[in-house]
Image (cartoon, rainbow, N blue to C red; front, side, top):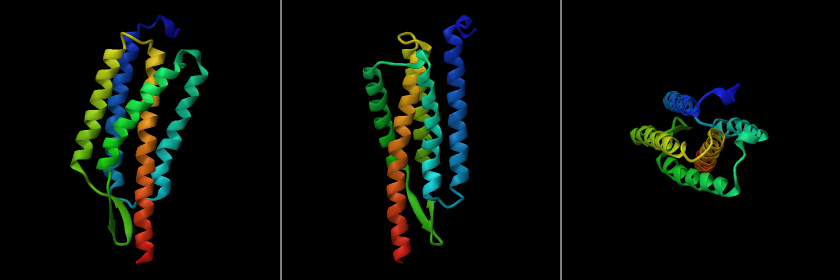
Length: 163
């Protein structure tokens, strides 16, 4: 059934979904800045995203080791930008994400860059391979970012407890 659908429709659909998810992340980020952060809130997104790894059960999504390394490398590079723009602040003895106008521009820029890469690479890779590579890219971007956030959070939490 899916084999009868032209790959361009999958690219367009996944691009629209990427933009909607990007808007959702920005909305969630704005709302989350109004509530204190805790370790659970930092770690739930990458843990929840890990269920997407089940796609590799299906042959269409399996990629070569070099493609995995390339996707991980790009994801780690992207994560450094997110790590640099994610800051915490203490208010009333609670830890909050610090508002950063740059974060939204960076997140939008990363999203646009991913979409442009996907459009460019869609001629070279099968839709399933491309989906797998971009899932790995996003996963390898999210984990280092969230781990760095967790370390920063724990460091700030210790100073609050000590005070």
